[in-house]
Image (cartoon, rainbow, N blue to C red; front, top):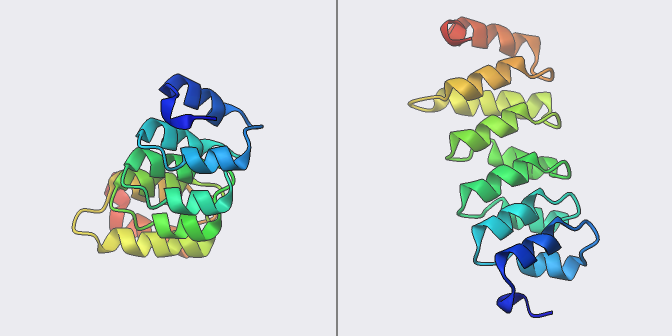
Length: 146
């Protein structure tokens, strides 16, 4: 299969197919087209080692899709909790897999920023796994934005 000569749509058909062989997904995860890599990142069949690599992608839309992938490993979620892009941190704060420890760590990071994201703070506050004491602290420090 000659991936280099395929159109974006042909590659997307492969990426979106849950039965695409893993070696093809691995190759497409390195595609120069960010849209192709983005779709590899959201495919639930993408192997964990590829998700780990895509979590470091320079394209923030690829990293967004990694966070939203239901197969995301907790260690990858933890790493993305401190991403420079607030949207990625927001998706981490909304992720149902986020543990109480991860959410507390993310809150500590967020409040240390010169300009913490109000959307991230609100998402953390609403998360069912955030400990009550952290909710009280958020309410105290950021009650005006909740």
